[in-house]
Length: 514
Image 1 (spheres, rainbow, N blue to C red):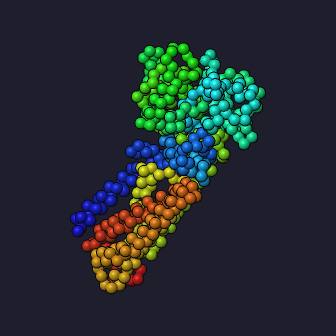
Image 2 (image 1 turned 120 degrees about the horizontal axis):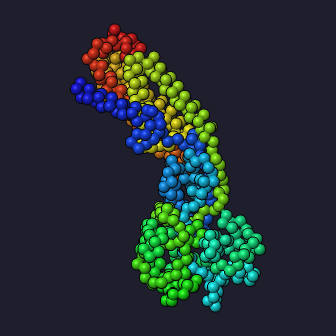
Image 3 (image 1 turned 45 degrees about the vertical axis):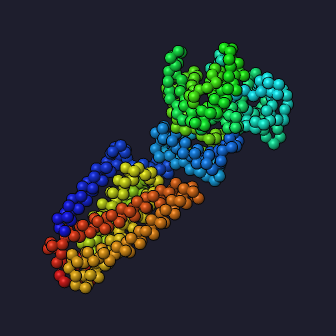
């Protein structure tokens, strides 16, 4: 047993050395992780709340769309290197986005709002088959769309090929309670007189398959940047999934142009966030699930757009501007970090002093195990990585008490064994054996509480601080079992057979044989 205990002691020493290497210096880059990740309340950043807009995709089940939107924005933000963003649902149709480390709130909004809602549209037609323009809606004083069966808003964009603003959003026409309303990209009502400059632009409606399903980026399977061999211009090769392949071919059959004359009647408009990327004519009726997005962009822009589309497009756009926006000060966070570290160190020191004063040598060994516990817990937080908010640090501080609780149970059992006349070795083994059930039960209740807190934080109250507290408390409780049952026990076993084992007064205040 002595040999195996020494091996375990060496392993513990190796783990402790590893934790020190990972943690110090604090801002060091270890195993691809640089420093500890700090939350928005500590490092500062941007806090945004957006309203989801379901008006342009009423067929999408709302909760599923919100879930997919959160996942998509998270994937999209990760591509820009944002450290541990917090993206959660608020209520039924709002999304909270926290971006730690961002100092420019406008740049943060652009990162979020340019979420790549890709859709394909075609020009609206009148009952006689002629194309609808913005001027038709401006002059006809209509109360409904020319195609009333298509209830989704109409989009109008700059169609001047000679302009640098070609394809840029002009206005959206929506149907309100009092009739048709022109709005800007943020949903504000526009004075119709300001639109006369673009009166000749076409009215674009969603392009749909035979079953009414709109063709959007949700049906994309892949997107890759490429160079057109004929024009030597950057473009994006896209691949549809099985459903998108069928719908795209159905639309191609309807818009197919057998001539070489460019006509909006045979054009499929490719829109990204209501801006027209390109408006190619449909020259084939069968594309086998493949297509090309071309436009006047550079290779870097094509690569960025491909990444934007490949990471997933939103099932709905977000209403702009956000309902709530705030820049969180990093200066205040720095003060909180300093106070949190001081609180943690003071708490750790007080617990160690109490353990040494009350339990003497076992208390000293438990204090060493407590230091091991603290470094191992922080190492897990750094390598996972876990974002440390004030709530997360609070969970670590609380878990210090949990870490020492198991040692208290063990040492009290050992004192009973000493009073019964047991030797140190017997007292150690009996103390751990008799205390194990209580240790397990107490930690199981902590685990259950952490699971409930995590569920409440992620679903009911939507609070990142609650989630952080639950995660770090769970990790702390788990590590505390390891340190109490293995580390403290191994250190005590190392004393068996030494001269110290006969000095009972070092192990209990109750006195005994000296």
